[in-house]
Image 1 (tube, rainbow, N blue to C red):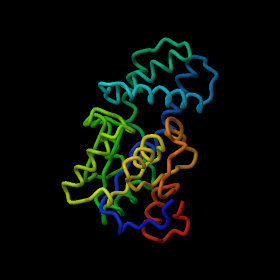
Image 2 (cartoon, rainbow, N blue to C red):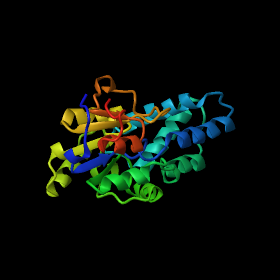
Image 3 (tube, rainbow, N blue to C red):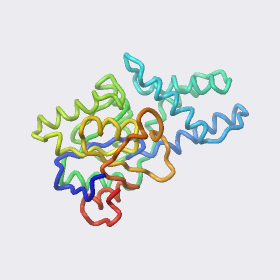
Length: 245
């Protein structure tokens, strides 16, 4: 893995949002735990989270691509089917709208502001436009470029997200070699970044699991591994002795 990445080597830093900047897993687990309790289903949160992960990975491969709220509706229906529960419309809709309530990590705002002072900052997100606007407001940040699944009609790890961002940054005079892509998901971010020749950083948030299993993750090779956005900024600034992965 690359040692000692420096922000001076990059003109743009692109981010996965959910899992990297938005702390979605506890909210998903709490929602599904409450649903399971109401139906007398004795299952722990990890199993419910993995049921969600399996469902979304399969649904996001379908074409034409579904908007993210519909992905969540379909995920909810699949989880209900897996546990033998008839889905109810009210809970399904609440799950579909839940991304707008997911909180930002405490270090997201400060970290993004610090990076944007020295580089363009982009979002590459498997989400719909309305949910991303709500999440950006929670972070308190305006991205320089935004690529969503709704916009490109595909979900990462599909390369269309990355090609769109690379093209938009090229129009700003930024070469692919000057882009750093950052994500929590090995499957959706690090693996495609590797295949496309993008430098990548893996934000391995402690206790978070989504995106760490699935096709190709065993071959994922981030150039830098950190546990938080604060650590990423410190590593890129050369102030963190733990920066090299």
